[in-house]
Image (tube, rainbow, N blue to C red; front, side):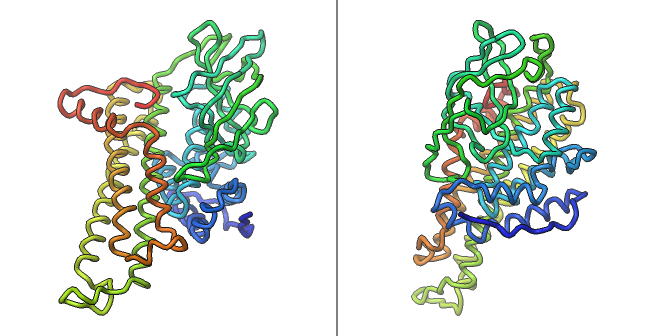
Length: 405
């Protein structure tokens, strides 16, 4: 089992740059054995402990409770940075931020205040069992309590989370309810069946929910069993789609960082090209390839940063968000996601062309980057993201809010 030396991090970061630097320190630790941990596929308890020890889990939490008080622009850059070292842990952190923020999306002010104080002071790590492609969990109204039952194919965070966000529909109604519940309880059964090509350490296997009880007062956004909708509660999907985008970008940068180091240190120049060089780093085709890949990554990062700015603009006035503001943000997020996927998959493949045959050895682990992006980018078909952008460009049509838009 992996363990990381417990360290006393020097103070709590107070600026965006300091938080990003802290994330880079965490990424450097994760990168030292990312390949070995990926091959072993063990539950990432030590990795989540590292996120807690570093304070990264409280990045979005209120300062008065010991949190970082940072914005989503910083959160996205932190996710990206951690994913450079380990894409799985970047995903876990990104999902954690989304679910830690969920109360602000749908809960009442009183619920938000209680949950954020408890979560920040306790350094809770969040997971979520909210896969829209499955049937909803069934909720039974039993007076002062509601009871969740059902099954979800994916539950990212699983056993390494302190709390899990559940979502279901009250039986006989159309009322959707989100609630935060303890992850370690008899009523949540993890099947430990996440055995996929990539993102192997995300604890994303299936889960059964058996009789999990929640007081009505903890049903997010409900007062006297009635939901008070907010425009802002439709923003959760653009938020998480941009989470995806940023850990894809981090994985892609990790691939380039790993490959360039290998090329400089280990790749041999080709001796039969007619214009032979002393090192592979001097060869034209190597320089041209890295230049192309780096340019594409920078472009994708710039678009993702633009999308983050639109998200931030909405966060500035959450209860007065217009459909146009939300729609524009969703379109740019969709564009950023497709660019990140395309650039990441290309980088994950083409780095082999400029590292050489020996770089395909399992011990090198260059395969991890393509596998990770390929796996998670199948979350929802990227073609629909392209079509959303196309409808906006051609017809000026804004995407309708859905579970994936």
